[in-house]
Structure formats: C-alpha cells, structure tokens
Length: 415
Image (tube, rainbow, N blue to C red; front, side, top):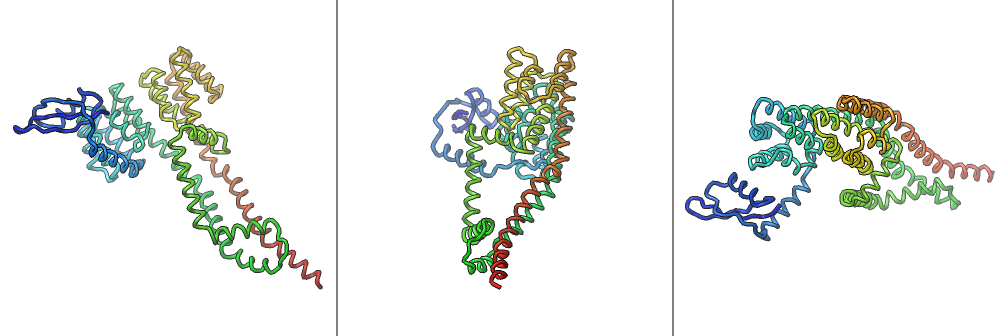
C-alpha cells in the first residue's frame, strides 16, 4: 500500500488528509467516500515519520493482542450473515448489526473494520484477508467463492456447516484425549511430589551407607537435586526454548517444513494430520467444484488452507499438473497420498462428467477415516501412557528398594 495526501476544500478551507491505497485512483475513490468536500488533488507522498511510527505501533500491538475468534461465536455470526444476506440486507448493514449484537470483543472489532472497508469500496473477501489469522483461510476461501458465483448466502451457509463439522471433530478429539491427559497429569504431579519430598528422606539414609549406589538410585538422586535446587531455572529454560522454537517455526519456512515432515513420521500424529488435512482439502474442493469453479482454481483455493508444508507441496504439484493439461486423477496418483480406490473414483468421475459427485464421496470417505481415528484415539494412546507410567514406577521402585536390599544383605551378612 502506498501513502497519498488528499487536498480537500471543505467549508472554504483547504485541508490535507493521509490515505493508504494501491494506486491514485483508489486513493481518490477512498477520499470521496471518507471525506465531505471538493477534492482538489491527490498526490503520492513520503509517509511522515510520526505517521510511520504510529502505524508500526498499531501493527505491533495488534500482533501482540490478536487471537482467534471463539469458534462458536464465529459460526453463529457467519450463519447470521448468511440469513441477513439471503433476506436482501446489504453486507454493510449486516456486518454492523452483527458487530452490535455479538459479545465477543475481538469479533466486534473485526466486523466493524470489515464494514468500514466495505463502505470504502473493498470486497468482503479482500477485507477479510487482513484478518486471516483470526478468521481462518477457510472463511476467506468460501467468501471468495460466494462473490465469484454470486451466491454469497449459499457459500456462507456451506461455510457455517463446514466450520461446525471442524468444531465437532475438535470437540471429539478433546474428549478422546481427556482421560489419558488427566492420568498423565496426575502421574506427573505424583512423581514431582515423590522426587521433592520422599526421595530427600532416603537420600540422607543412602549417604550414610558410603556405598556404590545402583544406576536407578543415581538417576533419582540427580532428579531430586535438579528439582529442588534448579527447578525454577529448568522451567524458565523450557519456556524460553519453547518460545524460541515457536519463533523459528513461524518465521523460517525451512525449519517449519522440517518440523512438519517430522510430525508426518511420528506415531499416531501422522495419521491425525494426514486424514484431517485430506478431509478438509476434499471437503472444500468438492464445494468449489460443485459451485462450478474451474479445477485449477478450486485446487488453488483448497490447497491454500493446508497448514502442513510437505502435504501442501505435494498437492501443489497436482495443481501444476492440471494446469499443464494432465488429468486430475493422474496428478493425485503421482502424490502417493491417495489410495488406488480414490484414484479410480476420481477417474470415473472425470470420464462420466460427475466429478463433483465423486469428489463429494471422496470427502465423505476421508471424513469417515478421520472420525475412526478420533474414535480410536484413546485406545491408541493407552500403550504409550502405560509405557510411561511403568517407566516411572520402575524407576522409583528400583531407585529406592535396590539400595535397601543391599543394606538388608549387609545387615544379614554381619550377623
């Protein structure tokens, strides 16, 4: 965006206003909408230092404060927007009305800004792209679809349904993980209490032995020393390391790519990521194809919502293949992500002219697979959970009882 100064004659006085726009025409149009009076001239200028500093401060604060909107509030607002649009109410009025009625302060701010941008001549999807973190790529993609097809209300209804489905899957995931998580938290607390309060009592006893301690006992005593003397430092180091790791992942594509690649090789996580990604990709792709969007364009929009970089790279190759004239089923086959049955279904859809129906069935298949993974998640986590618990119990038991057995032997040997 460039900086322009609009000179406007209002109430017999010349006044200058700063405007951000892509070109002079857009700056002139924005000046007409925002300010009353006669526009004398609009000229591109160097952004003043104080304005630049103010904009930097605003952007910095918005990045610090920005957070995703609560899914329930977003779904309710999208559905409300769809109903009002369907009823013939202008988008500007609908956005204003929703911002007044919502209790979510973040959503209120965003919808007010969207209304302002609409009033300035911007499209809804373009304005939404400024809030991609808060609204999500799916919201922007479906809004673009509605604008392209002229059926914004239908696209918003479909969007609300998809968001509800994603929300339901997330709730199922949380419920499935609740029991293992609670057990592991309880075990971790118990372990810390034992290390901090029980082991020190045995430490005094072991020191009096002046004997060579077994390895499990040495590990226990080392952990006790670490927890009781450097516990806060360890927590601080872990927190700082986590923040640095997050920064590196968010700001360096090669590091993010490597992390995503590692996740795709991790037990249990790989299937979760794979099938949730393919489920969402085919769900959106089927909606776009059904709406009559060209395959290459539909692929572009669907792929833009994928977070995992290795999967995104593979699916981008499908788009490139389709643009070069290759069949969709051939492009999908080359990625090695799809089973032969899926490839056959897509090929049949292309041959019979019912691709939209076939892709919908593919989306249903991936949803079924993802639901099955979520339903079996608790059972799949149990072996890992039992292994960790067994390891902690064995370490505590051996660490404490092995030296005591040695003491017992020494006592009985002495008699």
